[in-house]
Image (cartoon, rainbow over all chains, first blue to last red; front, side, top):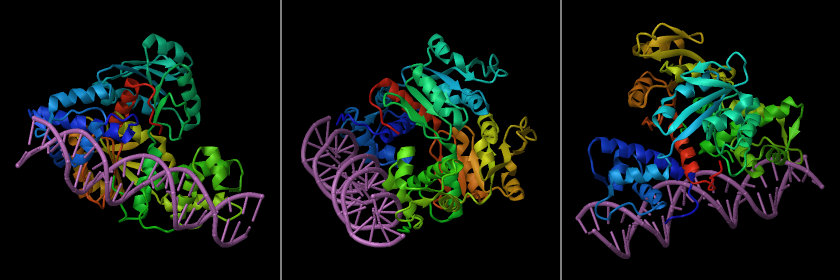
Amino acid sequence: MKADKISELTTNRLSIYLRCLNELAHEGRKTVSSDRLAKRFHLNSAQIRKDLACFGEFGVRGVGYYIEDLREQIIRILGLDHHHRVGIVGAGRLGAALTDYYGFRQTNFEVAALFDADPEKIGSVVSDVKVFDVKDFSKVRKNEGIDVAVIAVPAEYAQKVLEMIVDAGVKAVMNFAPTPLLADDDVKLKTIDLTISLESLSYFLARPGKNGRE
Amino acid sequence: MKADKISELTTNRLSIYLRCLNELAHEGRKTVSSDRLAKRFHLNSAQIRKDLACFGEFGVRGVGYYIEDLREQIIRILGLDHHHRVGIVGAGRLGAALTDYYGFRQTNFEVAALFDADPEKIGSVVSDVKVFDVKDFSKVRKNEGIDVAVIAVPAEYAQKVLEMIVDAGVKAVMNFAPTPLLADDDVKLKTIDLTISLESLSYFLARPGKNGRE
DNA sequence: ACCTGTGAAATCGTTCACAGCA
DNA sequence: TGCTGTGAACGATTTCACAGGT
């Protein structure tokens, strides 16, 4: 296949496949077929094959996939063999929780700096990470080699913060402010909107029985 | 239209439309057409009309939508006129940050209780919310009238915690553990997987230039 | 003239089903 | 026989385009 247009749905599933493979590898298994993988983790075998086929021919007919080999391939595809340094803008509770979040620690992402506008917070240390003045973002970004930014500020400041981040040259941003933001096409912006998720629960509770399964 | 099968994508957009309308109402506008709404907030006007048409005929031909009226309709549809009480399982940093999250405060959701298994934490108070023993979940749920649960525990405990929550009768659950969970169809389960989101940024950084826009 | 509500078309994503290889 | 890789069918979602109401 080797298509050029790969959906984010596909790459998200790659993350899931990787977890499944990690679990199987941990159990000492050497190979797995798309069918066994699907049955065991409630996935669809054709979808697994299609998703993988976007990036190459990793399987062996009659055998399946070599788990260790496929793990390495997915790690490479997802860029998990590269290290990234994260700057979190907003040193409130959310910023602090994210700094501490083990996802940032166990993976190839490392929180290098926090930023805030509150003089009370600037200079303090949260979970071993120093809080800088947000005005110094560009300078600190260079010194610390930050290539990923997280927006954890109130919605009304989020767009301005994003523009500052992008002006400083960061190309990958995760936004936790409950508002959609605008950015150039060469910047990857991922918004996690907890308000929408909450309101979706509210909708369900208001009309019991009608479940849109995930 | 009044269709029976309403996609979650549609209800998620309802949340967004509500925000837009709030902004317009704040500016003192009385009516808005789907086209103006779309242009201003970078949406698609046909989609707005289709989404709204699922729930009734709220517009006036030649005029557009009455902002105040439409706001009330969406609030009713999303069940934002009902109050909900939230129990958060896991009183670590993430649980604490969520307890503090203004989204839970400003909306119709209120954090009523935290739960943990750590004796050090049980009995303490985080952001005015008491931490209970997770073993007492069912009892506390009844006393406090909890109807929404949040899972903020490590992935390996998440499925067990979900089962406990569902056994206690809670029908709406938000999961922050980075693992897909299984639940019955009559339970609304919403998973927010920060690991997948991070890995999606990693994928982008590994192949610059190919952006799957949100 | 303006704008909604909605069939029809286009696009995107998933699942089926099987040819072909080990 | 077992399994991958993939064209084709199917299903879901988005966008177009316009009939019809004000």
